[in-house]
Length: 67
Image (tube, rainbow, N blue to C red):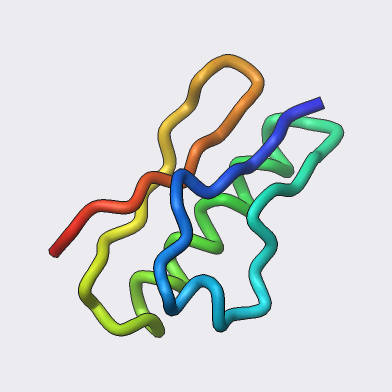
């Protein structure tokens, strides 16, 4: 099992329909979802943060950095 987690929740994330943590059967499914989430958040959120995916074993962490 591979888990996709948010590093921390900004205000835009809290107001969105995204989940803080999701579990997937395969790494490919998890990576596809994590990258799609980052792309969506980078395009539609307030632009104060930049979102990226970092792999740490069986966890794909969505990192939040200030723009």
